[in-house]
Image (tube, rainbow, N blue to C red; front, side, top):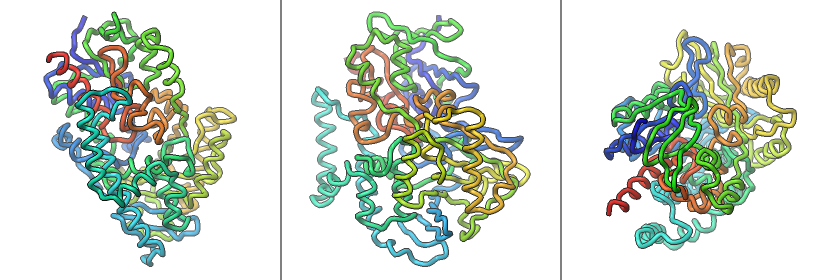
Length: 519
């Protein structure tokens, strides 16, 4: 029987971040991954020989400099190919809008009538988001109890908010629980510019822009100044950076190792049983899986009925699919200068278009008017392809997990055709240049990654499932009622996206618990 201080389930970026932090603190750490390679949501696919695509996540917008330095990722190849990628708000009529660094103008260089209002809005929201970033880098306050340490932490948060000034504090309290539809359209007119802000608020979620609390979702995505970056070498290189940083810290990683059971005795974790029957002993287990799966692995009898009920009511219905294309030629968007083709493209023509798109997802229909975010990473970093080919990677919003006709090969093909047709409308000739494709439905995401409902964030990223409510009351500070069992994945505070914060925060919770026991 092998012995470890901590075993971590899942070699995604959060699991690897937690493992690195614990190993840096002197722990003997093992990471178990059911897939053939580490990476999880930042893994890559080979669409055809020599052409690599980001299988799931394709951009960074929340991995901060403090986390990069803490994990030593910069020593293992984590450098940006693009550090502040512009966003193109695509318009079906060709009147595209360029957003970068808080400024906005039409793609032909003419001023946008809402430029000043947009700049003032984003400046204010970015300031609020900086306060959210502080809360994201620590465990959220407990709903009950917590002692003097939490009182001090709460006091610091409150003081920092108060120092923003009375007017800003009042405005933050007004907008934080608002819906993004009303909050944005109070400032700017509806259209592609507003559509981008709405898209960023609902991306990955089963919700429309009118849903209460979607402004808080938008603020979480503006924590690092709303900047998008593209890792040099693609997302696969970022996965290698996380993996190599963990190995350098002394972490052992085993792939093709599916967990069958988390062993518990006297309400204390004792180890792991693998699918092949082998047993591994440890004092702590950190799970990158969702809480429901984690509770089943450790046996439901260890949890009271109220906690089981809360976990069953976590909203985890996914509404996002991924489409990756290999192209023989670089796409050219009508009305857009070729120098801007390497930007982030967002097709969300208006807030109203987002709300209509959500209606389709609610009733189990594939989208007629496809809403998506797309990048062509090979335009910025040709090293990810060979032979002059290109890769286009698109996240498609409002693709229902529960499709009315069911998910099968025909449904995947139909979705792929719709996305290619939408892209061909703005970049004529793109359809003829597609040499390979992969379409990953919400159900495919669930099967491959274990994300419940195919939800990228393992739970809706909205006000009543964030902060001290994430993933559910009673498990908001990473530890589960079973002693030595913790959550460290996207279901935990502060949620999904590639930030490494759930993993780092969970590791800190483990170390704090060990320190208290030793005192």
